[in-house]
Each structure stands twice: as C-alpha cells, then as structure tokens.
Length: 339
Image (cartoon, rainbow, N blue to C red; front, side, top):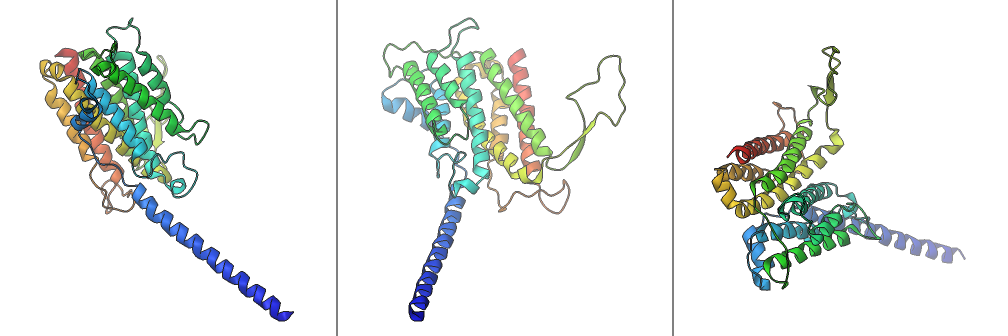
C-alpha cells in the first residue's frame, strides 16, 4: 500500500516537472517571438507600390494612382507585418507587447486622415460635388475600433476598407471598365490634408516634450475679457507618466512612418502644384526630417534622461525632429496659400 502511494507521488511529481518545463519553454518561445514581432517595418518605395497595384494588374498610372496605392500599401503593411495586427491580441506574446500596438495606432491615425482627405477633397471637384461611395465606405471601415477581437474583428474591418479603396483605384486607373472615379490635384485640396497633418505633428511634439515635466501657461482656457488672472493660476504641470513614455514614442514613430510614404506620394501627385508654388524643396525637407525619426534605437528601452543629463532622452530627440517637420509644414502651407 505504501509502495503504491510512493509510486503515485513520484508519477505526479514527474508530471508537475513536465508541466513547469512546458510553461517555461512556452514563455521563452513567446519572448523570442515577441522581440521579433516588435521590429518596426522598413520604409518601402511608393513607386514600386503603385507598379504592383496598377501596372501589373493591367491599369494605367492615372493621376491619383500613386496616392491611392500608397494608402493601400500602408494599410496592408499594418496588417501583414511580422505578427500581423497586434492591438487586439488576447494571447501571448501579443498580449504583453505595448510598443507595437502604439506604433499601429500611429499608423492607423494617418490612414484615417488620408482616407478622409481622399473622400472629402481629393476625389471631389468642389464642396457641392457628390462623394465617392467606395471612399466613403473605406473611411468608415478604417474608423472602426482598434481593439475589437471578434464579431467583427478589427483586421476584417480594415481589410474591407482596403478593398473599398482598391475598388476606387480600379475605377480610377481603368482596371474596372466604365469607372467614373476622379482625383483632383489642386493646391486647396493639398492644403486641406496638410492642415490635418500639421495638427497631428503639433500634438505629437507636445506630448513627446512632456516626457520631462514642464510648467506651461494654460492656453486651453484663456481668461475672459474684462477679467484678470494671477500669474501662477494660469500655469499647469504637463508631464507624461513614465509608464506611457514608450507608448507615446512608438505612436509618434508609427505616425511618422506612415506620413513619410503619404508625403512622398503627394510629392509625385502634386508635382505641378509644388513647382508652381516653388514648394517642392519645402516638402522634401519635411520628408527628410521625418525619415530621421526612423533611425534604429540602440537602447533596449526608451530612456527618459533629463534634457541635459547623463542619460539620453529618446522622446526629446523624437520631438525635435517632429517639431522641425511641423515648422517646415507650416512654411509649406504658407507657400501653397500665397504662391
């Protein structure tokens, strides 16, 4: 009897050790896969992208093809990069990764802004024109929740948005015969989209700069006319919580990654407008500043040293590039206004 009991205990101990070993192996495997999935995608050629989307499918490179194909390729990279779309993952390793979901959020924000500009400005001759139905459906899909796991899954909604955008591209380039899609490369249309990009860059610059606490004047609630305000009462302490520093950094990195491709596409589509306004160099400088944000991070973690301290502050470095791109963008919009 005692021998049987000892044998049962021994067997149970073996199974416990096997279970622990399996859990350790799974966690180690998830860690390695998580590191691989956290690598951000490289930049791609917008010209190669339009060739694959249009010319290899029998279409003609009409006006608007580069911008539309680039929007499709940016959205597809978001879904098809290593690990796929991670924001709505409920299992390891995607569950414990937060840098890549922040990067994904930055990208999808730019996709939404570009999709809105396509629907409201680029595809319409004037404000009273009828909107393109495919672009309207695409915009609604891209604005779906970022973290829905099922019924419906976020990835499915975004892929529907991509397909609706591709339907517009097919009509635009003649792949679908009898299409009536249009794309208008006017200065006011470009200004419309760039004004949204400008506000995004300004917000990112402020959030990145708040990695070190700063006391700023509160400009959100100005003093009403006829009233006075004490000097200290208008100040607020702005500081990003240390747990969110890397999230803001990678969101900015993702937004910049998407902006680079879309701005390069706009440089091709609006070449005549930019030449006429003498603004091509300004747009090129914006792209160059944003490309600097994609340099490899040599540290395993996002550091948050003080402005002139011993350790680096990656958020402030990113903020400097974003702010310089924003300043160049303001100059570009001014050139488009005045010529």
